[in-house]
Image 1 (spheres, rainbow, N blue to C red):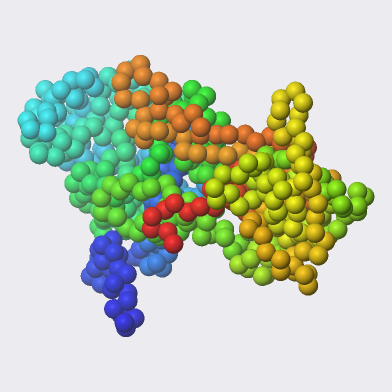
Image 2: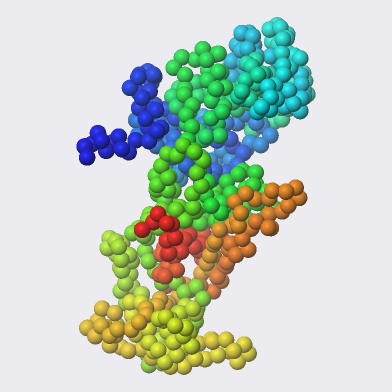
Length: 561
């Protein structure tokens, strides 16, 4: 296949639209995209899809990418969210560099644009209450009706709008509306509200303003000011596009930005609604916005997901036209692909069972050499201590084995990973509980892995940790947080019915091989036969090592290999 044909085959509908604009020389400036979050919460995996989409388009066509905060609602916004959003975007590898902007910086220019519309007879001050505005708007099958204030004169509208800015009227008493068409089949064009009165302190501008523009009015103006060429947004804004274009056309913007939509991506077992996420955090159902079970970028980062895995996830999905539901296992698959050849594989025992090797010298320690990663020799090797007392995984022993069990049994043999074959000769029980507390057995010194006589075969291999060298740690195991994506549906219904009671399990008495002693916050490892794990960046401290399991080893994504 020629390079031209390969490029055509890889081209999606968004590429086609942008390429056509470039070939038609619609713009005398370079391609410019933006991500416009409202700083009233934390970014989540859906945000990452939008960020990578906008950033990727800008990179692909040699353009620029802007981060612009849509901070036109003083009731919900905060600098804490601004800083968190910037950190998250930089962590994703989509840094806007110097191109960080704030909608509130354009307040005078947006206000001036509103005055221009009033002077053209395209906007008016309306005294209807919010409930009346909604009632007058009509329905999807019935047209709306004109506001009784729709025919106010230009002079009266200018005077009233000036009074709104000067704080002469209470919150919610008046709005500025566009004068378009109350019979339009598109409800968004039925004289939408452009400005409302809100007497509240703004986190950046203080009390300089008491009127604030609606997003649908401010957004196209902000795009035009910044020279955005393509305003890429999710499909829910498609019905808003005619209003976006109307604003720019009425204001006479040359080489106006073009709004284009892509499908929204949702994940199974995950809620990305800000309202729902806020309810989970406020109700203490989770450990804050960075809870590893949440799909916030802070939560995913704390759990151990990597920027590369999220980028791979977005690439796998591609550009979608319609709302898409993706299995969470696809994101986990991308994480495994990103980590499998890049992190060390070590031994960790999560539920320790003591094993005393009776024919091994009690004070002796032997240092074995194991590869850090079987797929990547560049990660080198490490020394692993072996001694006469070790710990193995409790589930790797069965006194009376079930069919197909291939690990250690009473009277049976198993190989210790990278070490020797051992035999279990005796089971010691706790007298009070009857629970197995210790195994005793022997090792075959001629079966050391890699040695001349190591070829004797046994059915199973298990991981282990030397008792006197093991590093204590706590490990959290996670499953999906929600049983139902939609959350509470009826009034008064709580989250309890929708939460998975087994979404988090804490293993307190884990032991890791000494290689993990110097693990730092967010370091990642593969625990042999257990999965991929990350050092928790919130709970780990000088005297406490805490790991989160990012994903198990088994890949359940149907598209995976």
